[in-house]
Length: 165
Image 1 (cartoon, rainbow, N blue to C red):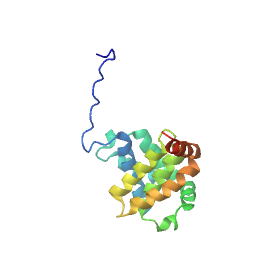
Image 2 (cartoon, rainbow, N blue to C red):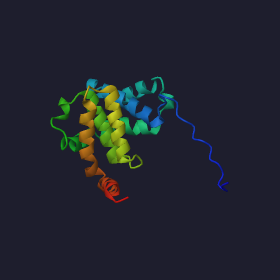
Image 3 (cartoon, rainbow, N blue to C red):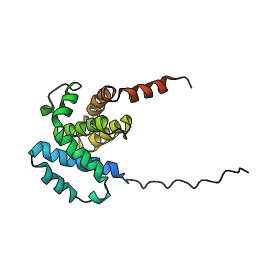
Image 4 (cartoon, rainbow, N blue to C red):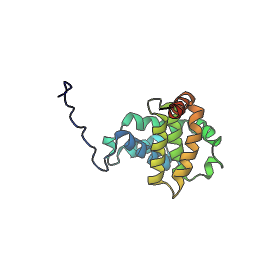
C-alpha cells in the first residue's frame, strides 16, 4: 500500500459546459461583429452584450479587454494581421475579421493565455460562427502571427517538440 493519499477524481465537465473565458470570447465576437457591420457606438454595443443570456457566466474582465481592446486597437491589430493575410481586412467576412482580431489581441496582449490556446480558441470560434472553411484561414493566419508576437514562447514550444524523448 502507498503512503500517498488517494486523490479524489477530478469533477468532469458537463458536455457542452463552456468556460467563463470561452463565453467571454463568444460575447466579444458577437459585439465585435455588430460593431464591424454597423459601426455603432462601442459603449452601446457593450451594454447590449451585457444584457445577453449567459453574460453573468462569462469572464467579464476578459470580455472587456477583448471588446474594447479590439475596437480601440483596430488599426494596430489590422496592421499586424495584414502581414499574414491575402487581402484587405475590409474584404474579410466580418466574422472571420472579428475572430482574427480576438486571436491577434490575445496573442499580443494576453500573456496569461498560451499562444496555442489563443489560436485554438479562435479556430473554435470560427468553426462555430464562421463560414465553412473559415477556421482553416484563421488557423493559418494566427499560426504565422504567433512567432512574430510571441517569439520566445513559440521557439520554446518548438524546441521541446523536437527534443529527443
